[in-house]
Length: 168
Image 1 (tube, rainbow, N blue to C red):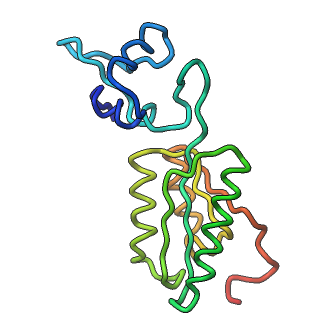
Image 2 (image 1 turned 120 degrees about the vertical axis):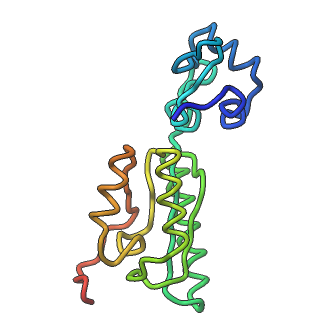
Image 3 (image 1 turned 45 degrees about the horizontal axis):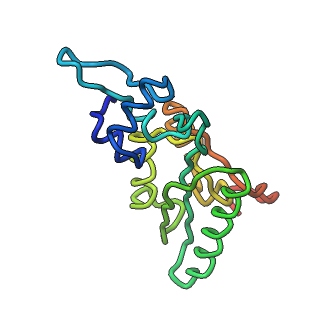
């Protein structure tokens, strides 16, 4: 998807004159120009961690996802968020957004998960990080993984799964 220079500047956090200067310096090039000469940038290029600023690559952008099953587990939800933020910082990644749900992992109508998948489709982040694979979903994680791969997005769990079966 291609976006106008105004949208690209907002995503980059710079002015239009800066983007034009970067184009002259060949640091951040538009994907193409319209017949009228207007610049068009790839949405992924404008958001993703592969963009170039000042001759240096920016941090890779990641999304976080946390989930607990019941409202009485809110402290655990906060603990998961802190673990993901710490992990992203250690890796040198930028945590763009964090999505959360208080719902069963078997519930397919989780708003946080739906928003996360919509964000993957629009921004193609480097990765989704979560504490354990079962936080993302109890079943169907391969489908979610395949969906994310179509947008070149990895799924990274920061802890190894304990030796329990799906039924447990």
